[in-house]
Image (cartoon, rainbow, N blue to C red; front, side, top):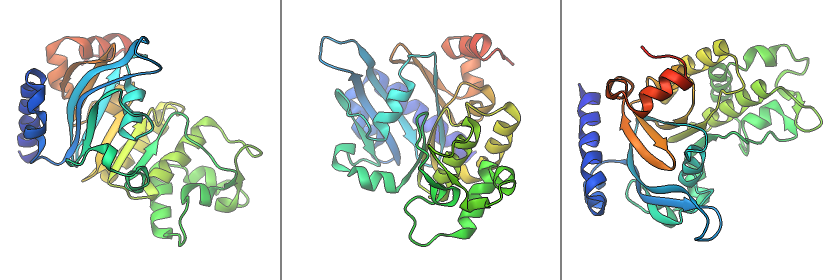
Amino acid sequence: MEDLHIQNEYTTKLKHYTTHKNDLKNTTNHLKGIAIKNVSFRFGGFQSSSVLNDISFFIPEGKTTAIVGESGSGKTTLMKILLMHYTPTNGMIEYNNPEIKNVSHLNLMDHCGAVMQNGTIFSDTIEKNITVGAKNIDYQMLDKSIYISNIGPFIANLPLSLTTKIGIEHPISGGEKQKILIARAIYKNPKYLFFDEATSALDSNNERIIYDNLQECFKNKTVVVIANRLSTIKSADQIVVLKDGTIAEIGNHQSLLKNKSTYYNLVKHQLDVCN
């Protein structure tokens, strides 16, 4: 009942500031989370076309938000703005009310775990790739991150186990790379988790195992997920549907299917599932 109350509260507010965007600051002040306010973004000068156009929505703290849309709709660009990789051309992002430009990138990264499509694997051991920058390794947390990311069977089959070197001179498959990046994000035990197609290189069985494992980890964390597979997004507390750089609709899986609009068509045609 509590989750439903929160869902209804911020859904009502979303409807309000879609029409009255200048009131967004007042409507989100008492709710913790990430407020995206009238955000637009373009690469290059003002004559170039916008990737995002006047985006406004709210990511509630402690909930999972999925961002979906066709290729080129602006999903990854939006996530990179949330992570301060890009600066909006217009508008602002607020993390629990302070504007993102007043938050240092280093401070934000201390509280974020991110798995991006172009995530980096360092030329070092598996252990150090997971526990990047840790002065004193928390082996209990390391074991947990290995379990959640389902990288354990791969490590167990290596002669040097966690001390096996990987990187440019010791390449690994795309799927094992994604598992290590997921383990790295989980090891930090961050407040915010950002996943951009984090399991795209994995088969459906591995993906199911990892996302089942992640459910406990997601509790009380603010999670933003970009994915195309229905199994990844249908359990999200809210789903933000992008189309041509704008928000087409927002809701949960069931409510969006009932709308029979953009999300319904994505599920039916692109994801090839509709039930």
